[in-house]
Amino acid sequence: MPPRVIRLLQHPLTLIGIAMTTTFAILIITMFVIQMLGYIGNPYIGILTYLVFPLFFVLGLVLIPIGVLRQRRRARRAQERGASAPRFPIVDFNSGHTRWLAFVVLVLTVINAVIVTTATVQGVHVMDTPEFCGSCHSVMQPEFTAYQNSPHSRVSCVACHIGPGADWFVKSKLSGAWQVVSTTLDLFPRPIPTPVHNLRPARDTCEQCHWPEKFVGDRLKVISEFEDDEENTELMTVVLLRVGGIEGRRAHGIHWHVARDIQVRYRSDESREMIYDVELTQPDGTVKVFNAPQEPEDEESLPWRVMDCVDCHNRPTHIYGLPKKEVAEAIKRGRISRELPFISRESVRALEQDYASHEEARERISAAITAFYGENFPELASSRADEIAEAGRVVGDIYSENVFPSMKVYWGTYPDHIGHEQSPGCFRCHDDEHATDAGETISQDCATCHSLLAWSESDPEILSSLNP
Image (cartoon, rainbow, N blue to C red):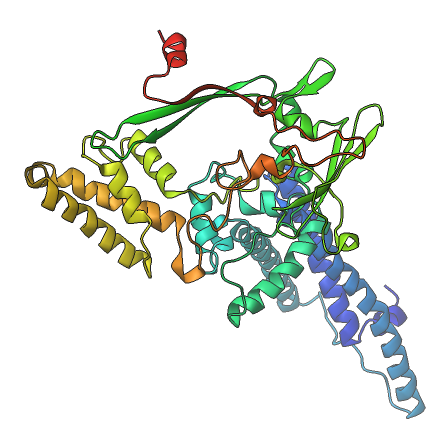
């Protein structure tokens, strides 16, 4: 390299720029090779490799000419004063000591690059874990607990809340910055509102794994509940759900709403509990607008939203149950002994009381169930003490997994729109009251979504027929 060029590279900014450019070039190449060799990528890996690291790489490139300009100015001023410009120290590779020192620097540079790369990969892995996302102590305790008990407990948080691509990563981090501040300064609301306005469209996240159009056919669902009588009589409701999808050239069933050639849009209040205008665009381009009987106060401020998965599956992961349903599930699975008289009634009764904390709830629930059998079935309380104690423990678990007093999360705080048990659900639109100007309504016919094969029967005939 010509001596004149070498002299221009003496400024500290130029040296920093060269160091940054070299370092991040090595990191980019290394991360790219790791991915090409089969490393399982995630949103953070791609963002670091193709967005964050290149930014620092470019910053280094920008610093180099700035340093060169400043060095030329410094040299010119030194010449005007009659002084010589600063020079690099002389590095003589004819010296064995110099060669050995250069070798050590080179080896240490490679080791440092490996350390930085490894730390970056591990840091990305840590940020990608649900444990990291749920580390905000009591703030995220309800959501993290519900996530661990959900069907998506093996799916990472970022897969649904961020998804692939840089734009939503940036949006999530900007949102997360305020969340850190609000958590630190205790500014967050209780309970945490469902982030319906910040969710990415389901076709960018949910449909990376699920494909509604391929859910063709019907699904048989058996719903059990237990009476409040001494025998805990099991009553079963059997429903044939018309899940639907694409069959031939026509969509049908529940998933008709999100078929590719059909678009449903709506306007609602902020919670999406109250649906106002509904717009249906059919495959032939025909558009129908169904208006609700009540008009919003400020119609112009309500944006149109394209209906997708989360408008019905609004609690796909963070699912909170109700007392009777949770107890029925525990009895069905054998976690609570059905042989204990009135256990269904007493469990639900204990769950519906008010408690200040999980610790208080566990203690009082266990004591209440134990006291009930001690007072009313003393012999049973002695012979089945272990089953009674286990029932008290399980009911305490049910409370602790669904109710969080410190965050003001109680039974029904977060309603589920699937069906119409915890909230109006389907009936937000299917109420026979949303109507076009021509008088056509959105039907409330239950057969649109399901067929009721048995209703609260102890021995449904349909199940005997299916399992002779």
